[in-house]
Length: 414
Image (cartoon, rainbow, N blue to C red):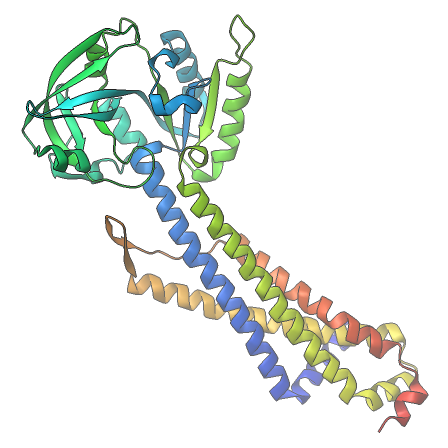
């Protein structure tokens, strides 16, 4: 086998220009794919981080049927204290969970004493919410960010603040209806103004959890949802499956499931953009396969055509068809390996350079976001495996043709 590799390498050196051009084409394909995966992956991870770390969390747990009717923010589908305790017990025992935050979601009338509009509110415990959604504080564009908020404070979305002409320090009134139909009002002080971002929760205000219970006259410590943050995003599917299995078995007296668990992908429209990025990545990989396949097949077909007499000679002196087949397959393999190694090296240098330059961009109201391209070793190995595998496959037909040549006919070829 070692002799076949030496002969194949020597044959490639004999046709330096063709070998170089083919390797360069493979290299360009590898560089294009690696850079696209690294940049698009960085953008995707950054946007997912913006969505999960400033609003949603990685997972959310609700009472069954809550999400399907979330537009009306139904208070009659809140989790009761016993159900909340069960969820907390499971989350505390899960080593992959970093933090979780109980929330009450409600609709209310927002008044600045002269005008009134409606508002969606998230009632939270500040210390738990900051651990679960650590980027929420960064969304405060006016006001004190320290500690997020206190009892009696409200964080107002920018759109409502502009429309109602309220600013930090102003007093406002919230009027809400509880699940029994009674109405109650409560005064608040504007602690800060939240920037508006796309997606659910982008126009929500925030108040303290205790204030929501007072406003809604809740006798029990009910919760609308529990947002969960994981230590590692890669464990999302695992934790989702664990929680779904644990909570899915809990049923009420009517033998109906009590809980539902959703990942951020089911709760945010940005998941469609993430899937589009994945689809584009797939198409880029397909293009890489096409480039390598056409390049290798072209060079190997030409190699067979130009070396017909040579093939006839080595066949006539007793070289077996199998050995001839392996010789041409090895040439294709070496071309793939050489082009892939150079492509990966160039790609890593480009990624290092982009991180050194620190490319920044704006995404809506998010300004100065730094792109940090990176590539996983698994992705590099996958790309290398695809390229080398396709290089061998592309060499198969020409190699098969060479191995099946009749020595006499090959020697007669001019």
